[in-house]
Length: 168
Image (tube, rainbow, N blue to C red):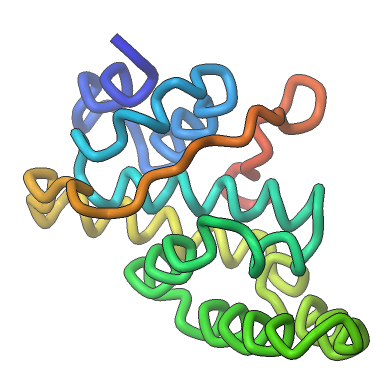
């Protein structure tokens, strides 16, 4: 039983925040990247958003938009309702495609991201998405057919999941 199975087994006893925190265990059990298509699509979305945050903080925006999970992150942002974030990320991808002379524009776009402007608000949006999906019964829709992650093996800061709790 992996961290996803443990969180799902708790049913309604786990809050949206508890579920979000549990998904950050992807860095403790990276083999689960290969199993994401067995789970509801929103679970893969949440894990990709956690990884997006981690990659953005550790490697920067250019790494996100040139990475192999760029399209999957855009889809996750759109499904969770972070349309402004997806739009900025898409513009950053277009900017990055134009070449290395666009560093200034990339920096300006990076400063506009919700993860740099309203970090807690971004994660509150993700928590709301988790709640909607859990209540809607979309738990039967799996991520089959979606491109899955090979999984970076990096970990968040010492002893932290990398995902803030409500009000952080």
